[in-house]
Image 1 (cartoon, rainbow, N blue to C red):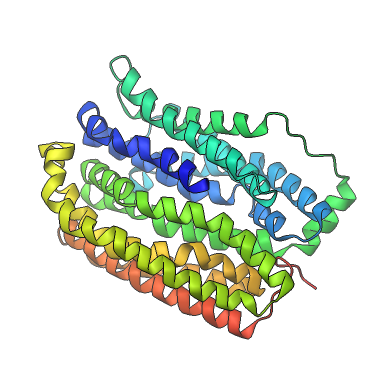
Image 2 (image 1 turned 90 degrees about the horizontal axis):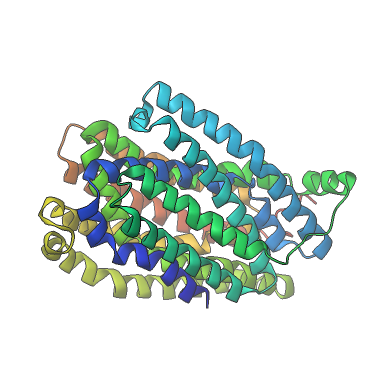
Length: 406
């Protein structure tokens, strides 16, 4: 059911991409990609990852308090994120000077909407309400695709693309909020939960920030080195080629977390075996999906997206090894939360950020395709290291209750 929602959530925009590339310029998509890259970095930490603590908590009262804490963190974190984006614009860091002040405001609002969506999604996943998650993803995907295509004759440009993103996320939040109300929790109870689950805001949130940066930073880096046009093409290639990975990771991640937490509560030694079996199945599925992409994409991209976008196919082919590694490792990375070794996740995420970014900087004097190939190879190696960290953490640590400091 979540898989269906993820397909419809991501699929429509990819399906209309041949229209998008003809209705919007490479520069428009470059600016849109820059804004989404910032949202992709900031939104995962908007709730300080306390929503994940709520998913893992055994006590329903703990889960309710942690979800409320995550929601309370959204406004200050979103405001700080928007302030950082203003600084990036003023000093033109990572080509963010190309964003108008209006786009800066819409980007900040999108961070808040995406963060609230993540908090609500985690709460619903804990209670097994996967149908509602699927419906919200469906609504989000349809709006994200329909608004730019239908309104492009009246307001073309990056502003329309980003406004559609905000409208899609806000609408899905409204759908998930209808008829739901968290019972109030007193301030002393909230403070007590925050003290017990301190690892999430202090270790897991920075880890998530680094993890998101590893995926999103390449686009602003490429924009700095090769211009907005190159960034626009990379944004299209990344969006399309990551669709299967987004489907698998989005479908498996929450379900894996819920089932692994349940298995660990009954038999802690079962978590390691469950992680290994899941990883093998994900790897085989990723190979089955992405091998044809690597072979076909370079030959059909020009016909699909337009002659100006022909090199998008080569970019997609170069990103395939990274997609296979990400599809295999990302859903099971939450095994580190269940091992009680959260600090190791932070270390692994630093590796996943440092290696690919270093590869981009070392190849900045070469062609765009060489830089992307080096980035993909370094990121694949980083994900392999990540898997080793997960396995060793599960072998050496016992399961602790959702990161609680006991």
